[in-house]
Amino acid sequence: MPTIFSQIVDGDIPARVVHEDETTFAFLDANPLAPGHTLVIPKADHGRLNDIPVEEAADLYATIHRLIPAVEAAVDADATTVAFNNGEAAGQEVPHVHCHIVPRFEGDGGGPIHAIAGETPDLADDELDDIADAIGDRV
Ligand code: AMP
Image (spheres, rainbow, N blue to C red):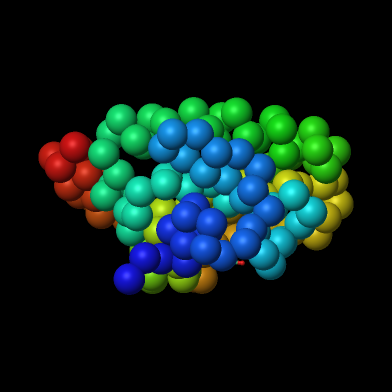
């Protein structure tokens, strides 16, 4: 069963499309957090960021890179929050990779990306060392 975003790419579900090329696609979010809230996706149906082959990931970033200034200029934004909910536990509802470009305005009352944390952990130095090693060993 294709995801709702694949159905948008195929033209089976309407959307306000702002960009399309060979491998990527972008359209306005149907429930915008701000005017100009845009979603950028790979056309291929990949669930999470690391499911995307590296060449397609480069294409996706290139489209994000191109769209950020276009979105900001279109709605006269002061900045943008650019983020992926990567996996269900992180709040990803549509299982097709998508980058949110959310225009931000001085005094808009929104928070920084740090606002995603529930309770922040109090980690000792040796725990931080272990975590850094565990990540480094897996890169
Ligand atoms: P996420 O929680 O990161 O999976 O975000 C999914 C986003 O997709 C939400 O911001 C929705 O508003 C948006 N969305 C869901 N269905 C559609 C649709 N048919 N057209 C445009 N945006 C959609």
